[in-house]
Amino acid sequence: MSLKRATPLASALLLATALLTPPAATAAPLAVPDIALANVQAHLNSFQSIANSNGGNRAHGRPGYRASLDYVKAKLDAAGYTTTVQQFSSNGATGYNLVADWPGGDVNNTVMLGGHLDSVSAGPGINDNGTGSAGILEVALTVAKENLKPEKHLRFGWWGAEELGLVGSNYYVSQLPTAEKSRIKAYLNFDMIGSPNPGYFVYSASGQPSGSAQLQQLLQAAFSGKVATELTSVGGRSDHAAFARAGIPVGGLFTGAESTKTSAQATKWGGQAGVAFDRCYHRSCDTTANIENTSLDRMSDAIAYALWNLAGTGGTQPGDKFENTDALPLPDQSTAESSITVSGITGNAPSALVVGVDIKHTYRGDLVIDLVAPDGTAFRVQNSSSDSADDLVTTYTVDASGETANGVWKLRVRDAGPQDVGTLNSWYLQF
Ligand code: DPN
Ligand code: ZN
Ligand code: CA
Image 1: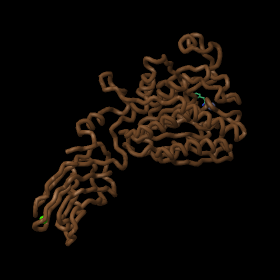
Image 2 (image 1 turned 120 degrees about the horizontal axis):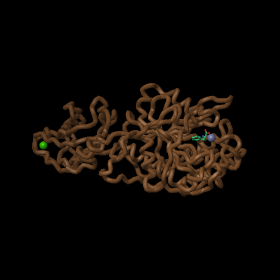
Image 3 (image 1 turned 180 degrees about the vertical axis):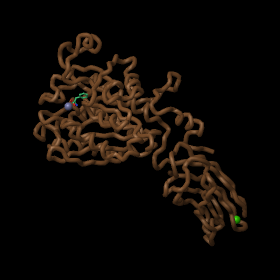
Image 4 (image 1 turned 90 degrees about the horizontal axis):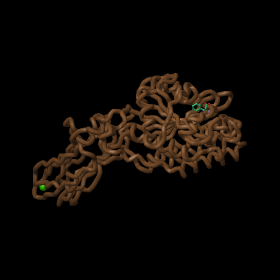
């Protein structure tokens, strides 16, 4: 039997990897992709152009905000994301959050990455927070490019009106039903990740509201062997706060804002001691000239490191196919069965499960075919008839939504008429 899917043992091992546990030293290295700095920079250039043609900013309630959202949304839509624009009202203007879901993965174990997309009205907000917005966008696009099939469900959020007091992220969390909140197992925040005089800060788990020690460690591990990080208590200063208050494990990365780099930090990280991490914080000079590329590159790669480690690989996506290509003789007036083992799918089969069959026969009207679910429920897909044509190469659609997806599915083929015989060449299930 030739199956496209991982073996049940491999799947079980993958599923056994706990959500928030960084890989053990002995685990096979995970192929985390390198995030292309040039692509992140291209997004920043687009944000800068948007600000230039919209009064110099991308602020809540201003056209540059909506244009920024449309830019991000178009990229995600083209890459296959399911995007949702959530409206809210703040300070007399309509605000928008953009939420993007990568189809597939276990929605009961959702990993979420986010950052705010709005700038202050004083400037274009390229470091604050074009960088976080562009970093998670490029990571999301890399997920699509690599066709990642994560075990966990992946969701990305671009928040509006952060600069007015974390309004968009507060609104998003306030609108989440309790059950939805408990499905989000991690929220990682990226707000300012390319500061011109950069620090390498990981959100401290012991901040207020408190973060997650495991997420803190995972983000620290992303830099190991590359650059020494420090912990920082960002407190309630960015969009992770609402998630933390809702009991969702949070973490994040930061290259620094208005506070000053110490000489010890300058020795460790380079740059200028006694100068702010970002001298242009909340000013008109927060342009594409206000970005330090090495930190932006490392931070973007660290986002990918965290996501790949949290998400796991070997999950499924709608449309995944399980196939059996072993030829099976269909003797005269008897019944033959062929099986396919399905694994790695959470929950039930779809209401439109596609069953594809490729049968060679000399009189296909002889054939009676059932799809048999793992629990033994049989779905008749083909009845015998006086159809005198030969081969049967077709697809059937079965409402299998009452059946658990994982397990051994069978195609039961009965030859119900004398003389003519055939062979089941192959068959598949498409979820
Ligand atoms: N988003 C900025 C602010 O709210 O002031 C800067 C910042 C980001 C501060 C992350 C702390 C942590
Ligand atoms: Zn800010
Ligand atoms: Ca026959």
